[in-house]
Image (cartoon, rainbow, N blue to C red; front, side, top):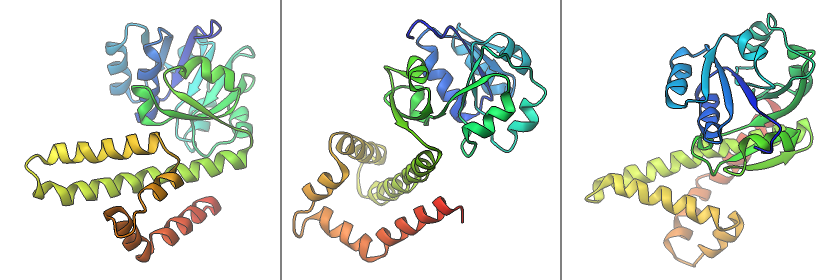
Amino acid sequence: MGGTVKRIGVIGTGTIASAVVRGIAAQRHRILVSERSAHNAHALAEAFEDVTVADNQSVVDKSDVVLLGLMAEAAPRILEPLAFRTDQRVISMMAGATMTQVAAMVAPAQVAAIMVPFPGIATGGSPVIVQGDIALVQDIVTPANTVYAVETDAELAAYLCAQAVLSPVARLAEDAAGWLGPRVSNPDAGETFLRHLLSSSLANSRAGDLVEALNTPGGYNQRLRMALEQGGMHDTLRSGLDRLETGE
């Protein structure tokens, strides 16, 4: 863990924050998690000997680095009563809150970074978007995961919009698996095949190169892609991303 971070506190133990704890606990961090989402917090403490449950102020008092896994709209009410220290570093995992906004909530602690993790961090091999102190976040989440650095609030906002493509892609895979299931002897294996196909293909090739490689005239991939594009897939995706960017 780079030798610098020894005590990590996590305030908020929802789905993503819990995934982060599961992913970093294997690196033998000493982790305190807050009692919010008590079921998740106690499940983490039972699963990992280095994870302990505490009240919010105790999490702050006993941590060098504090991860905030709260909803941005609830954060001011939860954080305002807490006394942070000047020597603490805070990493926000709250989508929609800038470093400046978080700094006002946790003063006099230092807001070191904004970190955007994904559920796959629980088992490793996941991307992590980071603005701010890249080295600090790398100490915590690598080498099991890969950090993607952004420099400005606008760049972070664009990444947050673009990552939303994950849900539509998952829905396409789910729908394809639903179509395949009744036509094969093992529907579960059919879905596993599609997930394996997508993850391995995209992991080893640029998206545009993959489209071109699958662009055999008259081939199955070309014909289905063209049918979806003719149905408005491309324009709908771009307009959806534009709406996310403008907050519509």
